[in-house]
Image (cartoon, rainbow, N blue to C red; front, side, top):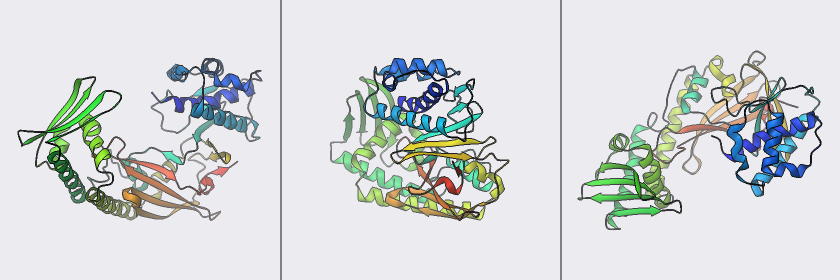
Length: 379
């Protein structure tokens, strides 16, 4: 289930459009009372919104939640008043938050119009690296790991540096390291009998997970003998609390990021295939939709064309590696040949659930200061 903020962000726009389109008499303050807001939403949105009932956890929306409602109202009002849209009283409004199987980014529909909604966000998609490669090159990867697949040697060196620092910490603390937080989640690392290191995760004094590793652990041992729970809750927590400012750890991480992004950028450039999936990479799908966002500077609405109407004016100028402050990035410069407008898209390749845990994502952002007018039509 998505969080309250996501639900409120999407439903506030849909509800506002519905209230205005149906000419319902209401007070703005009603939208800050969660039960009243939800009642309006249920009345105006035809699809099931029961999964969003968590917005009623708070009696009234204050602070950040109130700001989200205000921004949603502002965006909904701007959409409703935009002359591009010809809304009718009997237009059906749907919420797509329950549809986890769909490929397109549409969050709500009003009549025949689909909208992808953003708020103070520069992110276009949370994509896996395999999807980035498939879009660029026409490959058929099911899974790709930015570090393991493109810089395995450097990835192992990064792990070795991390493990060395862990052993140093344990030797300085009688063979133990532990952490307790307010949620009664205890994490611990202990050397047993001088030869085995255990990673233990407890919740409410009950052991949830434990992994046993040799003292001279290598990356392959770690990958084979740990679980997602011990990697995220214990090992990654240790790294975050102890190594974020450690020179040896950061140097090894940076070298791995540099090597992997250079190798990835080379593969993408050498195998670039425009017909393979450039439209998909740019979030262009079978049907036209509108990308709408609200920021502190105001509202922006863009028409995103369908694949059938997507032209040949969009080209990729360059694909480059970039590693600012240890972060592995791929930068793609997009140019519109008709307007000469350019846009830099940044894929951040990073672990989402702790270092050395799972497969890193390749979240795609457009650079601050850049304009989506290079690829979409502003209305």
